[in-house]
Length: 342
Image (cartoon, rainbow, N blue to C red; front, side):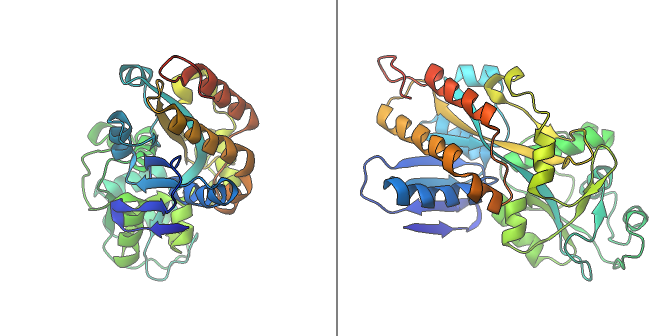
């Protein structure tokens, strides 16, 4: 049985069962909705349960390093030197998009148009009213209220924040010099929320708010998303086809641990803030049985999880990348005697 708990950073997917092979994971909130969906189907098919704590990428990295979970999850890929120093391997699990969401009176979902530089100036506190000239110029014919903008950002160390701030750093020199990119940054203005769940809740609660969340959270919570102008100058609505377009040019094999960043990709159909969610595991598995169960779960998800991913507007990995991931399991994940667990 699955019990979903979406209460701030403590959000967790809890599956009650007596099976010893149940697996534990912690980290990114970005992929939580699809991991919950996959886990429900996987338990029905195999009897193996999953306890995934949706606590943010930073906390997930800390937990896998401390070996308190069987796998960690992060939306910011770790660098080769960091993986090596902690004896970790990394592989991609799913792709999706980050969207700007707003609570602006009279504005309907998908109606408002924004650009990266304008969002950067809002988050820097330089644009403070919804009827500011910079926003009005992008939205002729839209009645914008003379209302204060309340910026909402993540309060925890977050891969979603990494994707958002990495994108802003690419499109706004001012943002790059004053704030920069990272899982945790020094925000110029605004209020924090823990997890995608916390940001979504604050945007729903605060009139005049703007925030950023994974697309599945925007849909689930019926938040009013915005259009976003991409690198080629096209205003797009978020959907899986535009996330796929951004991922199409990814050069997976050139990055250690498949660590690609898909923000501000070229192409008229490319969503500007597309991201990959990664799984982290120890190369040497102290509990080979648990390690093997983690791999079995993601192997099953790669083979059977595409329909559920599409339903939530996530993007499954290309078949060619799945083969490379499976090869990395064989070469990297060993038991105590050095034998491959996959």
